[in-house]
Image (tube, rainbow, N blue to C red; front, top):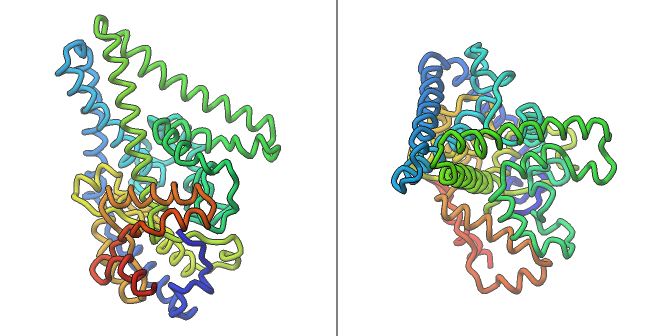
Amino acid sequence: MTTADISTNPTTAHLTAEDIETLGRELDAIREQVIASRGERDAAYIRKVIDGQRKLELTSRGILLFSLFPPAWIIGTLGLSISKIVENMEIGHNVMHGQWDWMRDSKIHSTTWEWDNASPAEMWKHSHNEVHHTYTNVRGKDHDLGYGIMRVDENQKWVPFYVAQPLWNFINACFFEYGIAAYDLQIGKYLKGRTDKADFQARGKRVLAKIRKQATRDYVLHPLLSGPSAVTTLTANLTANLARNLWTHSVIMCGHFPEGVQTFEKHSIDGETRGEWYLRQMLGSANISGSRLMHFMSGNLSFQIEHHLYPDLPSNRYAEIAPKIQELFERYGLTYTTGSLPRQVGSAWKKVFKLSLPNDFARKATSAIAPTAVTNVVFGKPAAEDEAKAA
């Protein structure tokens, strides 16, 4: 991941200001086409997903009433894990982005939806929708980039604290929903005296109330309802929440951390135009290739590039517009960064380890390791080949 400035970035040096604004207009046109074609097909999709998720959760919790028997524990835990992932990613994340507000259904609306997550919806929408999607990969502005606990770029000053960032990242993965809640609460800013104490305490009470409600349901109510299977139901709920956290963390890591994704200096967005904003989303995001099931289970965040270009378009339409976006990347000489889930997760973790060390030490330690290949879909070669030629 390299720090970039749109105006001096070597990967965009061939683009004129007019090229960038023309690109922006073409991307606007794709957006308008989707908006004009939204309809019953899309509404039926999200209603079907919500109905299926709720039935799966109810069935899984019913099976866990008999979790004293190993087959019931395995089936119930697997079903509950899947239902929690779908609720968070394809439903909660996307509903709260306003992707389905056009339906004017008060039950499926960004202003009313509350998800199965430790972070209250209103707090998450501010930190994610308003901050992250506005300042994507801008160091010092986009706090999703490393969540304030990791070094994410070679130009970021190294301090000894970063040596442990692989450990922090692993712990964050296991308790991801709580890490997001702490991040949304802006604990770091409070400790530095940059947040009003009364406001922080009020938001803290909302977070604790949300966590208490979830914990009561998953770790008290449902185990008690299981009677003799109380302990095994408790372990099933713990396992399902862990699985959801690890999966969500992995998908999110793949969106902005793998090799080939760029970060940006604060000054690079001064006076940023619509076209330049689009271009920053294209350079600062990465996709995950895979099957339809893979895309669904990721909440269609496997199409992270498309999502960052159009965060409020229905998620089920990203696969449809992806070839159009790829064609624009090709035509404008840009790299469409994508790869399989194992490759992208491996690339992101490699970056976490590399940047935990001082630059010179990290370069020596990794000089014998071949860089992770990044696929340029349809029109390019693996980035490793280009780097080898350049060397």
